Image 1: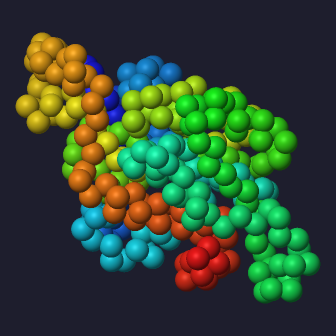
Image 2 (image 1 turned 30 degrees about the vertical axis):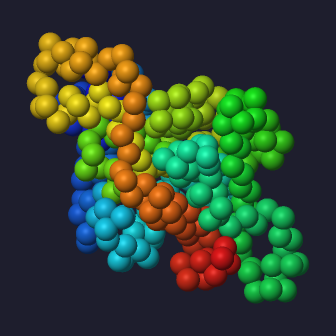
Image 3 (image 1 turned 135 degrees about the vertical axis):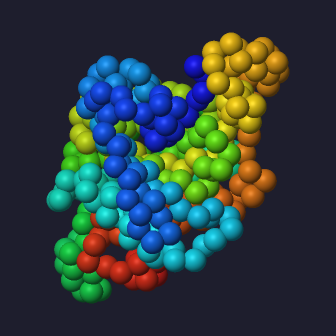
Length: 295
């Protein structure tokens, strides 16, 4: 099978479900569906091609069509992020991706939305009425082609210097189906491979490589062309998939498909991910207050 997806929910669906070592639980919350998938064995991880850990998927109405009830979505995502984070300590937030490529700009755009507080002293916070701020540092490290430095190497050096309690990384993802673009948010405690969403995966960023808990977040912004072709043609076995692969290759093999409303999608997805992180890290402040602080 060559369907490529960064979503654990899609990988589990494509496996047919019922795998030993995989638990799936879905709940409905207003207009949102929240699916929690836990992979507990190495055998299941190998079958799904996803690391052992917890994957939380929040499905919302398309962000490019329906942007109502945004505060409810933010608070729901914030609650799920908070469930994976240590209660106290500095948190480093990294917006991964290439800001010069719109479908890959989710991470950098999200970084622009994060309230950085590590530099704010307790005395200053008290003076301006911001007592209780959790220390947060944020950066958008760019990509290897821009810096000549692997993102993982850069983050590791900063983690070693700052010793955060956790690292949150945000990146664009790839999905198997078009109807999941811009209406799905995945949160995981398994880390991420930068660039995987746009077909340029780099070394994995995880607790094992960073030395601290790593929470990854992402919204699907692209579909691999070969994956899309096989999905639209309803391929049901390896032989049919191989025929599609041969037709797509070689020129279309590395092509990615993205919505024409990608600019609006990235803008709204970054607002959702950025403010959800802010609310998760600063639960004592309202969405309105945090929006004002980052504006």
